[in-house]
Image (cartoon, rainbow, N blue to C red; front, side, top):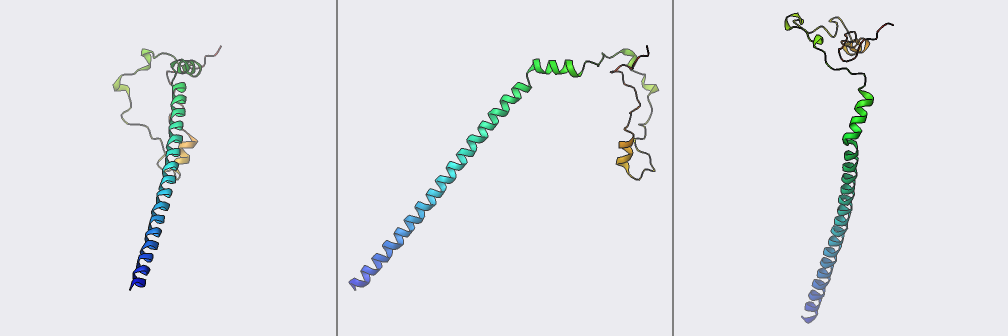
Length: 128
């Protein structure tokens, strides 16, 4: 009887040790996962900080002003003669794609809409 009791207690002790080892292994794995997630979060925070710094550099009004001067130098102010009366506007938008076109995309790419229409923002080259 005592031998059976010793055997049961030993089995319970081995089972308890195995269970404790399983819990320790699982907690170690979760701690490693937590450390990895914290590292990823730190990396994302650093990336966000770098992007914010780059955004503030790109959003600098002096930089935007310089880009506007360089790229928009050919634009002219709006002139009152650029506007027309509403009665003279076409009643319907012009056909952008011919109705008999098989490939509508190539039809638009071959002749972009309004390619020949002059705009009022860029002056026409004058003949000297």
